[in-house]
Image (cartoon, rainbow, N blue to C red):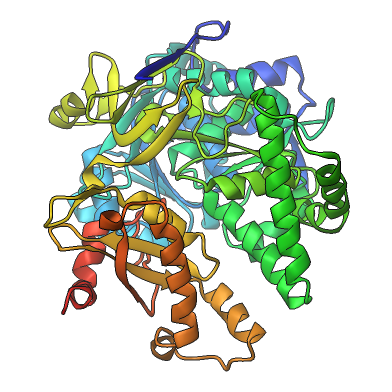
Length: 608
């Protein structure tokens, strides 16, 4: 199949702007619990629709009092937290355009985004962010205001606008139309300077309303319960932003968690008890690997691996039955599954708060076996695909017929087309307006309403999309063999000891790889084998560890032909990090930067 169109849903066309629902919901049901918010003691407390509306209104007044006007661009630079959502909706209320900035951005990255977008004001979290702005402010003559959250910026703005009449704010709000620009989100910049994606209120409303209407049943853990989700994706990324907008529009209670590490995230999942959540595969990998390590420490490695096998076979049989190609799980398999549900799967669900039965995944590809395991363990993950330029999800697996290992069908109202060269093209009301100040890049990406994604993929006979790689990442060996590195890298990363893998080989005689290690997993591995803790330089030369990584490479090579296989690899002492300019803020590999930084190691891979 070369093209698949999913007919639009029956949703009414969007009107007004994104902030209108805040005021509508407060009027319809002022006591509805809209959000959860941590107090100063770290306890979650409820925020009603009326309370949230009042805070948005008060902040909008303060912004107007401090000179922010309709169409102005205001940046937000902080982690995922309640105040980000508050600022988003206050700025949208008065027709301002929000420019999200990753809190980990370098001074030069910050400068480029604020300069290119002609930002007039910025909200930051703390003094370190303020100092980053201070180093570039002399080159930003248009930047007039800076608010700092940890020194009382919100209260300061409340007080500044207290004298204004509500109607002043509502006049601005009524002037916002679906075509108005809501945000300028800068791409991660894996291959060059970040580009500002212009996204309208209509783009977000179509995207959020479509997801709500089509996937609303999966927001609940059981029929009739209150939907709730914990947002821990960065709000500087389009995926996190879409979750925020959909939660507000869909009346889904949600809270914010700024840290993705397990030590911070797991206690909040237990306390907040979401009914579903949206994440990247990295999170699900972490949950799975933590469960596996716990079982090994308790001497239950064998039963855990058996439980994994049963979960995978059970979910595979359920999937086959849903597609009419199998009878479903056998009686024996059902009995084994029931047993392991009590002793293993319930604990995996408990680590995610206990109420989660559904989740959505995007941002990168998820291994089919991992998806099957979670489904068999009672948490069905609906994998999807999208870009900043498509306002997050363009495809997703439908609730009633998930096909694990694919990113699903086009969401309602959109079309997926596979071009002659295998590139994925998208069309729909979620496609962005173009790149800010860059007509050349816009013309190269948008073609008569079609978005050329730069990703390679294929459609099966039912219109399910599988992403096979990036056009710009295709390696061509000196022998002329074209190799897509993604499939190899993902399979190597499946090994619990591996943190990252980058495949190299462009204009080289064969394919090779650089591998980094998961320090937490390696510490556990050493402990379980009675080995002493080694320095990074000694660790990468440990023969037993090399054997483990070689197993991962051999497993990856089974997916490709001999000419495409990884012939040799090198284990690195340190991981690729954003701080060293080797990862984007969304954790994608900066291939050219990595190859430059590790040029000596790459050359060593090709010495006779």
